[in-house]
Length: 200
Image (cartoon, rainbow, N blue to C red; front, side, top):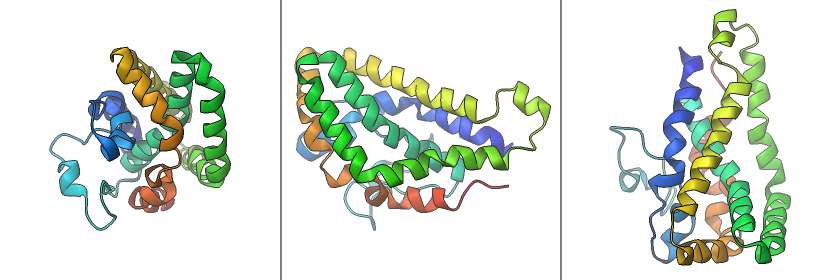
């Protein structure tokens, strides 16, 4: 049953593209405007989860699968946003690509570590039953679910007025320099949870 949790968490987190995409002023327009995984039904509000980690911080659930899904959506969204903005405003594509490359250079070890969790899950699930494989439980299915969120984020972006699209993309290079996009630190609670590894 636990093997189903990451799939469910990724499905629930599909609201990444729309949950916090409404326009918001200044600081909130950075990470929150571009999206964070939606809280699970019945979960405390983001305001209630803020606290010890500082303003805007959300708390991990302690469930590896849910926390990994939330964290990977954040990690991959950085690249997705570059792709969306480069497509929408080709004249700025080189600037956006350079900003992303600089961000990745600074955070490559962390990104590789998080992407490496899929191999860890694969090793832990190597003894999964044939029924599980037929049901699409495995890292290829998890990757596909995660990548499906890219479409939702793009669709939400394209549904916004052009002026909003322009504002968001103009802010992208600066956003990458923010503390919020130092994900290893800004999402420390999720990182601690994920680093404990998937349950056997």
